[in-house]
Length: 230
View 1 (spheres, rainbow, N blue to C red):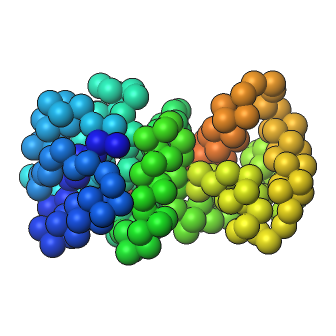
View 2: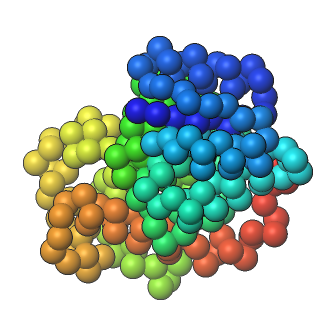
């Protein structure tokens, strides 16, 4: 798997590169600002780009903006964004209407090598990897027109773990329930969210997109109040 890393903090960037190399991933290039990252991703054509939200030249959300444009230019590119803020609006902007091949993790997760590398592999294969803390905030929104209100507490918990990109086995392990129970809850989630027949992977992505879309209206109203950096 081939990766390009965008992070302006030199020590953080070198640490990420070393972790990836030890995990058997090939780092094609590194960048310390959003413009250089953009050029290198288009030139090297990696499987995944890892990018910090806050990067030069403006040290605002330059990295996020670059990631969104790269997703537009290269739809098959896996994009994993790192942020020091538990900010849902960043994740919503990045995902848009297409959650395939995208991840959003808090920077503190980098130290959990297994979680970090697993997230990279998921987005590279077209899956979704959202930080558990961000997912909890999204699912905690309570709107009367929210179709997620139809779900039971257990189904919402299953959906939350699904949104992190975990398989049925991963959901079962996280929630300490059987895989059979997970399958039952997932089937109920698809039915209640009116997600019709299709491949299991595609239906799971649609379920993730359902909660993302229904977190959006409130978050859009708060977009101007987001933190100045990532």
